[in-house]
Length: 112
Length: 111
Image 1 (cartoon, rainbow over the protein chains, first blue to last red):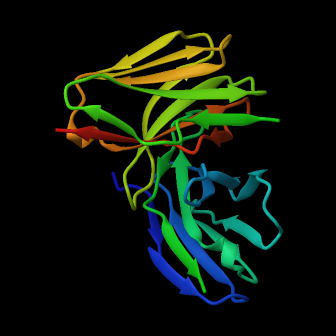
Image 2: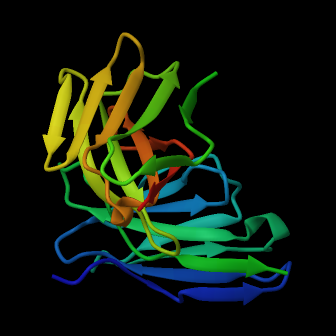
């Protein structure tokens, strides 16, 4: 069974631009969560989607948004990029009713 | 305030010895706790889950304990190998499947 895939793997953007990251979950997993990881910080929860609906949301500004499609694929968008948005963005999928999360390799975003 | 603490400094262990990593938390009432392994440039990989009513869980060379009175989980790797070198993350789960993560402990196993 294919794992969680994320595209692109690396991205360099300029401050003020916007970016869209994509995540394809494991087949059969309808829950997709997004996290931001910076050096020395734990994973910071952004949001979780289930069946195309945002189910939970972390404490991030409205510049961070997401959506999920009917095939469970998810996208995350960050508008008006700031230098502090440079991070590894991870998505994770899981089967409903199961706690274990499966992570993708992440997208390394660098904002200059 | 709510806080999850893992050893911030790297843990250096001699090959063959037991590595013990600590996860302490305050002002949470987790229903369960998970441990993940993360290698550089990769996403975390699930290792073990322990529920609030369980004291200990084992999987091959891995053992996790969970003390809700001390608000602490210990993660043990016995007969450690250089391939066990990685960053280990603990994550608390409350009632809604949402996880709260520690910053991780870097484990280095020296041959």
